[in-house]
Amino acid sequence: MAQTINRETAHGQRRIEARQRQPNADDIDERRPTASVLVHDAPMILSLMMQNTPTGRVVDDGVRSFEVWEDLPPPLDLTRLAPGPFVAQDEHGSVYVRRRLVGVVPIQEDGSTRFEVTGGLPLVYKLPDTPLSRERKLPRVVSEHVMFTPGESVHEGLPRTAFDGFCAGCHGSASGKGLDNGLQPDVLSRASDTAAYRSAPAVLTPPPAERGPAVGP
Image 1: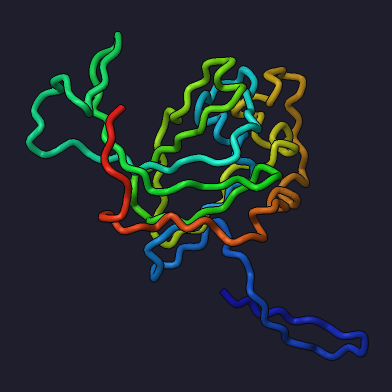
Image 2 (image 1 turned 180 degrees about the vertical axis):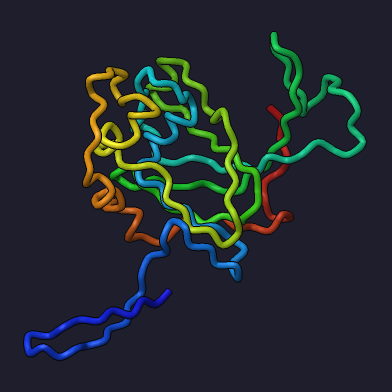
């Protein structure tokens, strides 16, 4: 996407430059069937998707990638949740779960990541096992699914250094202590300064026939 910029030289002359700019978070390109997702701190936002409570964040920097799965609907002729490969049961009842792997997203050294995915798909993230997850018996599949609009360019989350200064008002501070909540007015000017912002995205756009096999819970 080109952006035209007017610059004034030392002699007062106007010079017009054109350069490529990153899409804004609210840009929608209706010609594009995919969504571009820039995550500024994947371990931080994944901790929120696992447990969105103001009790402190369990941020696992051992997570260096995560899987993206498509959530599939039940068949139209399903009338009851009988025991089977796609039905999970616990003390709360039964739930239908059928997913297939779309791809794997690598995470940069600073925790940021960027990926492109087909728009309109209900997606679930699955994390790999790490020493911290095994020690604390942390869940590996996020407790909510996400969906991106075709043609959307979205920024998700902020780097953890900016979390307490902007996000803590709703989500609680990273430490869980109220005294650590503190608004920083200039936080957004530094929020996009991550490695993934300057890198090419991981492309997760296989056609349905090339996605992984359907698996249950």
